Amino acid sequence: MPARQQKTPPQPAAGEAAAPDAEEATADLQLLTLLLIHAMPAHEDTGRLAREALARFGSFAALLAAPLRELQGFAGFNAHSMAAVRLLHETALRLARARMQGETVLDDPARLIAYLTAVLAREKIEQFRILFLDGQDRLITDEAQARGTVNHTPVYPREVVRRAIELDAAAIILVHNHPSGDPTPSREDLAMTAQVVQAASVLGIAVRDHVIIGNGRWTSFREQGLLQADA
Image 1 (cartoon, helix red, strand yellow):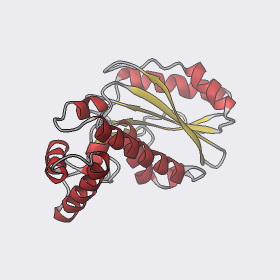
Image 2: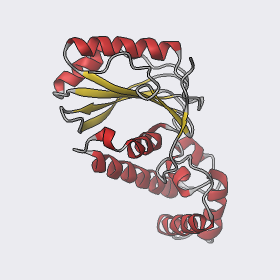
Image 3: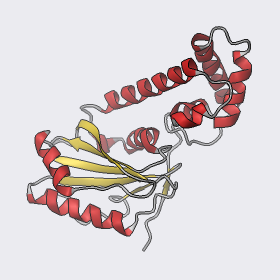
Image 4: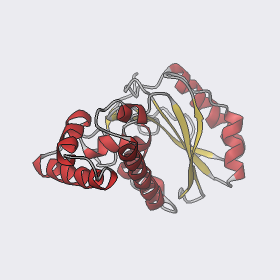
């Protein structure tokens, strides 16, 4: 039975939320205009540039999450404005990560999905990440383990387990993205997850979930009953 895909909860950080309403659109325009004024003080019309950028990317959040190559392809942005956008995006991610640090991650699934979507939804190649948790399922750290191609990332269960042991983690959450936008698990995804679960269980490490992030959609192995073992 195919996994039921879920839509990402609309979160400002996600970058793929529905089109903003009038109030949000006005706030987006004001924020981006202020950012461009500081990044491009000599620009003759930062307000116009901000409107054009929002029309191109859809929202301030989507602009922040856009890959560098997409920013480079937008006429009007220079090195200073692109650096400001990337800095603000990285700051937002660090703040979101800090808010989860030491918290019981599974207590707030919406916040977790919003964070993972902000990190991965607009990636053009697959990236495999792991959230390492302590005995109370509190976040120890979140690390990128591998980057692959547009449709494949090599994952080695022994390396996943080795890193969990190094961090004294009691549980992990596997995460990767599908650049196609469709978070349906592939046969390779299912097989890799089973291998990691088996390797981790030998050492008493639980795999709490495997989340696949698409474009505005996501799939949780735990919620769809695809996680065959859960300590």
